[in-house]
Amino acid sequence: MLWKLLVRSQPCRLCFFRKMQSTPKYKPFLAYFTTDRQSNKENKRTVETLYKFSVDIRKIRSLKGWVLLEDETYVEEVANILQELGADEAVIASILERCPEAIVCSPAAIDTQRKLWQLVCKNEEELVKLIEQFPESFFIVKNQENLKLNVQFFQELGFKNVVISRFLTTASNIFHNPVEKNKEMIKLLQESYLNVGGSEANMKVWLLKLLSQNPFILLRSPTTIKETLEFLQKQGFTNFEILQLLSKLKGFLFQLCPRGIQNSISFSKNAFECTDHDLKQLVLKCPALLYYSVPVLEERIQGLLKEGISIAQIRETPMVLELTPQIVQYRIRKLNSLGYRIKDGHLANLNGTKKEFEANFGKIQAKKERPLFNPVAPLNVEE
Image 1 (cartoon, one colour):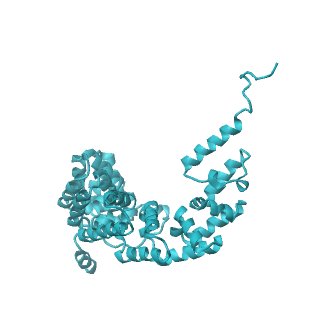
Image 2 (cartoon, rainbow, N blue to C red; image 1 turned 120 degrees about the vertical axis):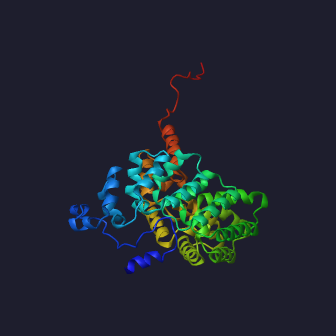
Image 3 (tube, rainbow, N blue to C red; image 1 turned 60 degrees about the vertical axis):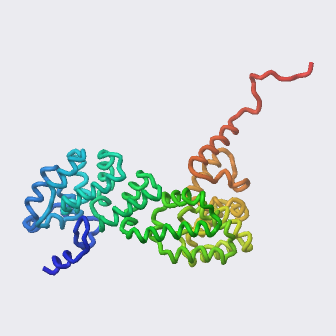
């Protein structure tokens, strides 16, 4: 009876679930079939209702078998709510197989959740698609009141509903924060932006872009953010330069801590044998020098050196450090196929996104294949 008391003592949430022992990644084939002893303990009504909706019981047993042992489940009710939203039998089965906890969620709690998500969904069809893609984000929520207040707060800030729905599915942890904590963090971000020279006119756009690209900033400690900005100032970065980093790194600057930055700076200074001023210029060109760890930077520099690229070349085009060794090798092979020797030239042709590289490669290829003269054009020969 002890485990029942422990479960009842947990805070209110959409789904109650027990902490299960971790299961091995790979199981013997027979492990996917229940034993008679286990079958006798399962709630037969639950199993029969799941079969009715074409749910693969084996998947549930292997993923979250404990839900089948619950005395009280709501398979029919959950399926009916999903059907009312427009989900067909295949979608319902897929949702329940991937998120078995859904069947121990009370219909009232699911209905409340549905109404909350509909605040940011255009229609029921869009809501069903989101639930199908991210069932756990929908069915497992710690505090619905927090969710409601945070959704309203993000709408007041000016976020489009499509962005908020993305937060709900891919960054649901930020809705676990009390709304006051999120408000406090937003205020700190706004103050930080203004303190380094950002303008009131641009602040809203900057903030919306920042959080759209990295909403997990809201889970950071305000103290760490303050310490990071103060550390950069102590390293000699001006307010204008820090503002540049905020624009280039977006939310990643707030993911850093002083110790990590110091380690990366010390390594880069030794690797490139440069002064503090020169290093600062490198960082402004390639902010990745701040947020990549020392092992990552070391691996990438060594990878470039093995390809015959010099430290001087890397210093000239430090953005190349944003590429993994595998991408560098692939691009060098492609350029070599055209007779272009990267170690004898500029690294700009190696740099950029995949799309940028392919476009640049196409230009080099076209230039190489272009004839030296146009055989159709008349020649200007003196008579």
